[in-house]
Length: 388
Ligand SMILES: Cc1cc2nc3c(=O)[nH]c(=O)nc-3n(C[C@H](O)[C@H](O)[C@H](O)COP(=O)(O)OP(=O)(O)OC[C@H]3O[C@@H](n4cnc5c(N)ncnc54)[C@H](O)[C@@H]3O)c2cc1C
Image (cartoon, rainbow, N blue to C red; front, top):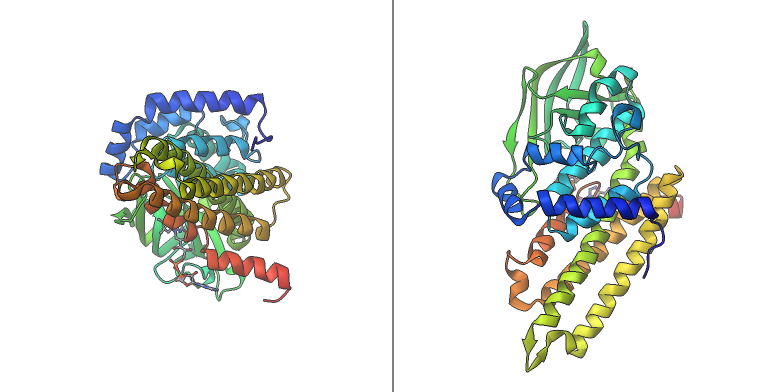
């Protein structure tokens, strides 16, 4: 089904992204990222130069000023995922644009915007967002990392885990306790920078998928962080800031889910048309045709849902429960499509050189991170029933 949310600017941008991919996202590069467990900085800088990242940085700070127009980000994700870079550059770009930049662009002080945003637009400064801890994932108010006020700043102690871009990031927007108890105003967001004394970001995790993008454990031992790194300049707003930006993170995972579903359909179409069994293309068996029909219809419905969500987001009207619906529903459909796609590839669907196999492993985390799909259903259920 023809999508009608893109105008000629988005179309021109898509062509530019495709050109960028031809030049910088080659199969050799992707293999290297998988081997290294991260995307190299030169590619991130090229992405900055071509406006592939930094889309959400306001123009006055050198970005594209598209913080609220998610269609450009959708184009980036769709094309990178189609090119097989869903588990490398698409991930790294998403962390930069959807998880790190918005906290500075929306909530940062003028000095923080001046300090970080221009470099975040070019890729010279890479960001990450650290909320999860070994003992606190879904239940964010259980975090134990503390930032104690001292003269001129804070002393941070604690640990974070599962942090995407955690090794490569130059600045990490970190969720910490600045108060007592677990009321929302006990928490703040503070920027911890690469190289600060007592900050270790060297330990990466060995994952099932997303091989080309680093996921790290972070530890903080008496890290002195100057008070000007407190996001927004005042304590106690961290929880609310997270709640305000999490719908964007969830929208972005929904978009990734739909883009993977679309790519999986395309890979499966190509494969089943070229593979023969019993003297005919696999695509001609009635079972295959019906499965492909189901997949194609699901992809259309996902985009219709997401395109509506992107419009609401642009108007500042995407509610937390709507973003939660997008995240859990699209990633569940993505999973079904991938499973079907693997099945229609037969044994080759299980072999890693086929993009469908990689995408299958990568996609598993879409139902876990950004808030698990169980927690998403809780958010929706609360809104639907009016009961906690
Ligand atoms: C590859 C990867 C990248 C990640 N990137 C980041 C990142 O960049 N930054 C970051 O901060 N975090 C990141 N995470 C962490 C991710 O967001 C958490 O793993 C996720 O929120 C779940 O937390 P948990 O792992 O502690 O699971 P838990 O919270 O312990 O959950 C375990 C199980 O219990 C269920 N559960 C928990 N609470 C409820 C409830 N109220 N009702 C019903 N079921 C419930 C969960 O759904 C899950 O099935 C990443 C994780 C991975 C794997």
